[in-house]
Amino acid sequence: MLRCVFALLLVLCAALPAQAQRVFQANALRGELVVTQPPEALLNGRSVRMAPGLRIRNPLNMIQLSGSLLDQKLAVNYTLDGAGELREVWILSQAELAKKPWPTTPQEAQTWVFDSTLQRWSKP
Image (cartoon, rainbow, N blue to C red; front, side, top):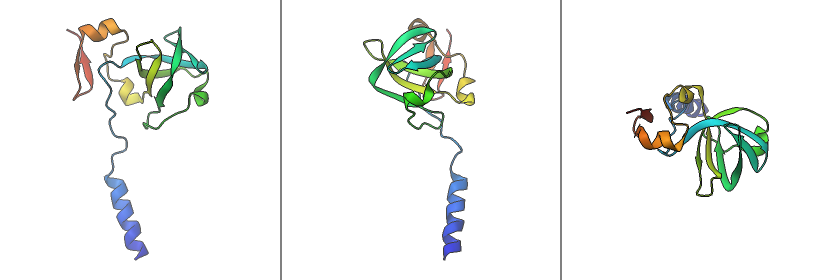
């Protein structure tokens, strides 16, 4: 009986994808994040404050605490709240980082076209 359960678990695990594709919002911009002294950070070399409800997700889409990321240069997609504070951050995997182009400014995001199904941007 135990062998059957073990065999079933192996089959189920093999059927799961290695990493599910994450879905980014159309307002997610790309940048470089360095957590300096929470709630302070550098975003693209400029000082930014982390919002109280900030969610940072690692490449496996698991929540990562800002204190565990001190002084690391991270390639990220991110969103800002209405006050200009970091609201959501996704630390990018190599496959996600390879998806180019991706807007780095709100102006680019307003003029480019986003395909939410393919998770790709195209320039007009």
